[in-house]
Amino acid sequence: MQYDRRMGPSVRAALLAGFAVVFALWLLWGYQLVRSLRQIEQNVTSVHETYVRGEQTLSKIRTNVLLGSIYLRDALIDGATPRRESYRDELMRLRSEVETLVASYVAAVSSQDERDHWERLQTELADYWASRDVAFTDQAKTPNEAAALLRDRVVPKRETVLQILDQLAALQDVANARHQQEIDVLYRQVRTRLLTMGAGTLVVALMVAVMASRHVNRLQREIERQRRIERDNREDLERLSARLVDVQEQERRTLARELHDEVGQALTAAKMDIGIALRAELEPRVRSALEEARDLSDQTLRSVRDMSQLLHPSALDDFGLPATLTAYLRNFAHRTGIRAQLAETMETRLAPDIEMCVYRIVQEALSNIARHSGATACTVSLNSGGGMLRLIIEDNGRGVGLPANRLSSGRGLGLIGMRERAQALGGTFNIKPRDGGGTIVMVALPLEAATGAPAA
Ligand SMILES: Nc1ncnc2c1ncn2[C@@H]1O[C@H](COP(=O)(O)OP(=O)(O)OP(=O)(O)O)[C@@H](O)[C@H]1O
Ligand SMILES: [Mg+2]
Image 1 (cartoon, rainbow, N blue to C red):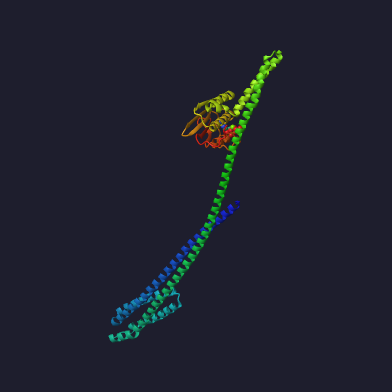
Image 2: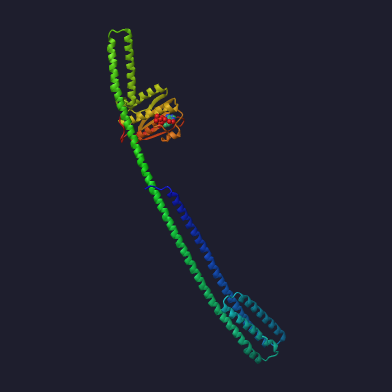
């Protein structure tokens, strides 16, 4: 599967858009919820207020009408003129109170049927209040006359008014029930709308979630694939490095043997031949030439031996690691002028591949000290413990820079080679600036389980 890089941003944009839509939908949903609740609340309050106001108005009219009847009866019974005036005033007050109340209430009535009833009520009330005048026009009345008046003219009017009031109360009940129904319908509508919106939002959210999880899955698969490729590459590289080290060792061994066996033998033979020739009677000029040739052969033989030793330290096999290292350090100090000492060592013989690994790492580390550190002294120490062999090489030079510590940033192969050798034996390699200046190289190798190493 080739991962399409353009897919990333577009999927991300789609996901962002999806999340934005879900968020916006939830916001809208919340807004609708609050608005609808407010609407329902307003409706309920207004219905309740209208109902209560209607009830209060009706009750007040009923009370005033009944009170009016009582005052009228009292006025008829009570013959004294001054008191009749106070009854009249009282009746006037009751009337104007009722009229004001009715006028303000009727203005707010919306139903035509109810309005008709209220108009009828207003007419009947006007008649009713007019009927009270009989008590004040005819002066003196006998109780029988007063009772007849009440019975014939006042009571029927009052009954009519009370009937209309009852009808209005019934109408109000009906209107109230209708309003309740309207509120129920509104509530159902709001509920349906909110449920629909909620379901829609949920569907969008699910779609976004599915998209997101598919995207994450794809990314995860891609990461896995990259990881596999990286691991394969690393394994290939490790195999290649190990093989390189191996081939290098074999090459060096072959070269060392060639030098030692072929060139060394030939030079030795030449030197012996020159020795035989020198035993004869010779002209001084020839003798001196032959002596020069013998010295040259000697010198070349030593160089060949040194080279052979550098290429493949056969001394390792013969004398072991401490002796070989000591000789190498002495040689190094002699060549470079940098003091070098084996500070700590161990006498037990180690596996040949470990000894060769340690020797090669010391070789490269010392060569780095000579080339890069500017140090005046260095120490090599070797010790073991806990099944591990620890090699430490320190110098008092300028110290390795941090990038070199990362092994991969420099162009050199020395550090890489050292690490490869250590890792090939299951060990670790580390190089870092030393506390107090200089560089420290630390290698740890398991003493057992050394495998796959290029043996010398
Ligand atoms: N003892 C040291 N002191 C100071 N710098 C060091 C030391 N050892 C290594 N370095 C730094 O680390 C770098 C990498 O070393 P490395 O041995 O890998 O490469 P090189 O010596 O430059 O080349 P090569 O070893 O391949 O011939 C060096 O170039 C040097 O800057
Ligand atoms: Mg180097």
